[in-house]
Length: 402
Image (cartoon, rainbow, N blue to C red; front, side, top):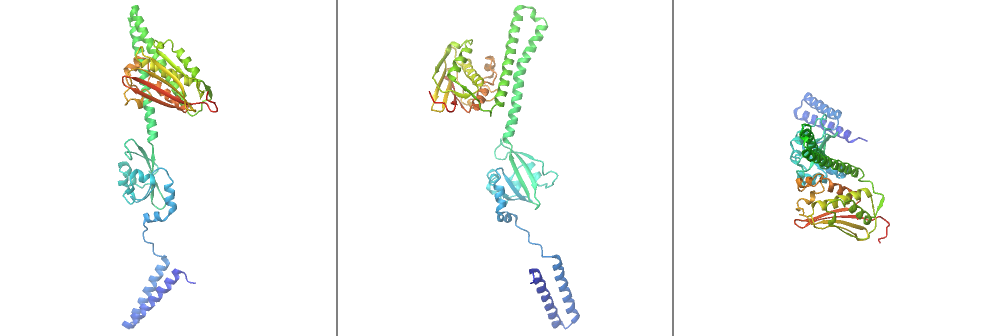
């Protein structure tokens, strides 16, 4: 049985023979008829040897639409993915359309991703550079940072993959800021120490009063450096244990009086007022919770007005949580500062904080301790009235509420 191609060849040769016969009948010239027949047969053989004619250029967008697996694969990718033919977008998953707009299908990719570096890469399909990522700023929001990678498929289309690197960029920036701030905080007292040492070495220490004053300043600056280094070490340890669940059973009703007793040397210790209820123990790290209490009560004593009460309270909240809070009657904090209070080295009033011995890390430590204990930190403040910091912690599992 003839194949489709064989049938077409036989049909074409029959048409060629018929054309030669018609030519002979019209002209009566046998040689002309033979030439027509030979030419027609040669054309048929050339076509037969060359195979079927090349198919018409495919419509890439239609091809992508006709292949359901193709669409399913790119839709399964959570990050933005586009497929382009030459410079035209022929497919885009939901994430890409959400980022760049629904109109990008069929559009020039340089209009979809409006970025000079991206346009340069997309116009250069060279395999030598296809693996190198391009970093983009400005897609989505101004704060977002994207990494664009381009791969060329065997069929000639290219896959454009966008990876959101905003989180990594933010973490890197926080790391750089942290190192810069820590260096500054350490350099300031160190410079003061060096200055006074040099002054004493030049003979200023010969007078007892000047010597004592300088030595006191040097001692205070050294203590300030010691507090800062201690807080940096504490913060590092807490972050290292962030995902390790605390294993101790801690009774806050016993820990709070102990911390208050340790703060008895503070000039404002007499302003402390405790309102402690009997509550269920919490599953926690006793050392870290003690540090949390020291930081919160110490802050309230620093920033509250002298002679006004600093109220420390502990009570149950529902059947699963305990609530510890510290309230002062200080100057209060403007609302625009409250979201940033737990950032490292953030201060509402830098001069006042340093003069009171603050390192700028107290509330950052509190936040990390609360997060490790799977609790919640709330800060409420009214300017001119005071500030209340509340911590909610889950009680120890399998403990019956007293």
